[in-house]
Length: 249
Image (cartoon, rainbow, N blue to C red; front, side):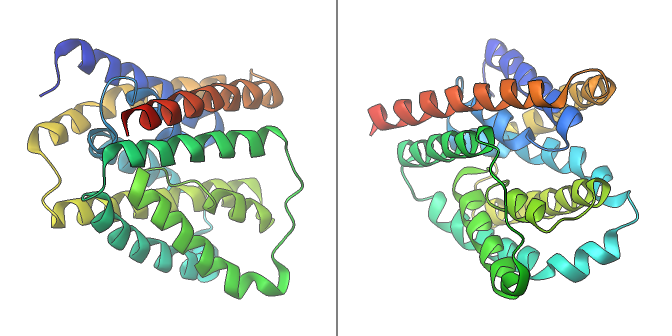
């Protein structure tokens, strides 16, 4: 069991990540992992993330009234993503944590720079049949290695032109499925320490409190301002995490 001061920091990280999720509908894995890596190793942080990730996304994935549309259109991405998570976790548990930390730092940095540039994402059009499973495979591989499940799945879903409610529900469906896949893959390889699962269960409370506060603030805070602050912080965390992992190699 981590020391008390680290438990408090984990609670803060989950609260902050829940706040971000309440404001935007995503960002819990990226922000929570980025912050927790200031105090624990990546493999520990991924286990701690599992239960809050599932709980905060299951409701988002169930409500919205677009489930049939989402599954009919995105099942190839979901299927390949879940398979990729299983195989990537098998590699992750045998890989040096410093290497995985560098990968996560690079992903957070790249994702932040790309999002701050606010590029116009083109719809996949006739390539959707190919890009959907490819996006799932890439996202699942990244998620299995680092616990970060947004890139490039969220960017791809945004490019599909779904309305806001359907997009938020689709993200909830993917994150819920992926959290279960991560749990099964880690458990199947004996990489779920019981003490960290207890911490993970306890981390649900600050995550939900932050998420509730974020949802209340959503209408008051200008979205463009929040995006800049969020991705700016994520960019700095990405640089720090990547450098720390590089120095540990």
